[in-house]
Image (cartoon, rainbow, N blue to C red):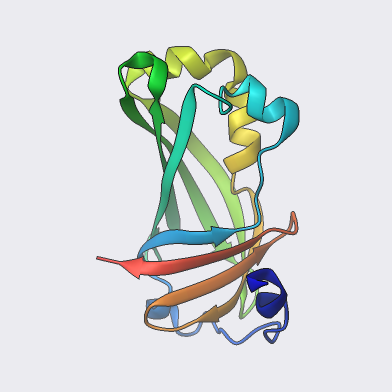
Length: 158
């Protein structure tokens, strides 16, 4: 239902001439990204790994964004960890940015060892490279679409 309403929003109500509206810290509250089938099994998401919150920090002045995906590993005494993906971006139009992958890592190291074999699969799911169009933004809410057809709704956090 939410996806239907999001798709009814006008294509672009944001302008990168007002970058302060996008800068800062955000928490993902809705996404159409799904991890199904063999991807879910290979990453241990059936019984072993539980995904948590996804946070994003956008630094307009540096043209950089950092995504942090939190997760827990049940089999390792409920060890908590995170996947951190750093990217740079370039404004492509008044509502769109081109995104370039810079680097990534998983902490703590024990979890990097667990994901090492399927690390490229993990990055393929969460890698921001491509473009992102900001459809709507206000003081507390941001909605965007990417080149892979995904929709993202984020709320501002302190």
